[in-house]
Image (cartoon, rainbow, N blue to C red; front, side, top):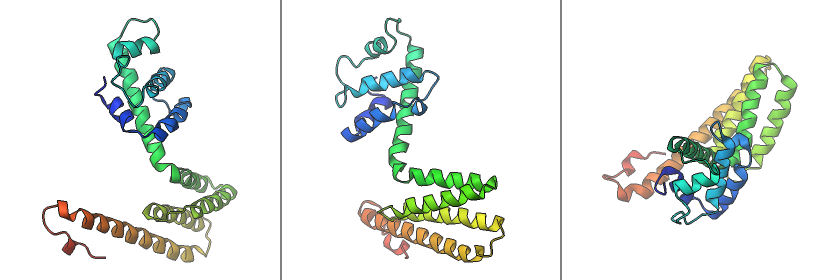
Length: 210
């Protein structure tokens, strides 16, 4: 079992990520499968062995006995629990890599819902909250400008639906945000290509035009 995906993922985590995982799996909503508490128990058990998963105790039968107490070993049941534990880790990876913009993404989804249901008051208050949240982002890279575009796009749709004459002004703002997002993304990708050009076949410089 030591060589499977579950252990490869756990072994790749930094100590602070293991601590974050321990908090993440406390919520049953984050756990995959029909037996979330068993998935939780397995992951809680495994984190105690981090970073050395080559210990004698880290074997299928031994771990199964801890999770299922005195039940006889059932490979099919065990494989399912391990598979759901792996899916839970994948959810955790997505959670920690998008956490900075996670709240903003959720607010943008809420905006779309409020606009569809004609909940104007809720839309306006959520738009103000999302704008304030986005303004607090320190690193204004491509991810920031991408969310800024999405946010202004939702507000533009809201204005169109309410026949607000200011929607034309908002359209100009949307186009500006979209231009900024694509320019920064192209700039970052061009830099990436230039730094990697030494390990690629052929010269990539003629292909890069800003």
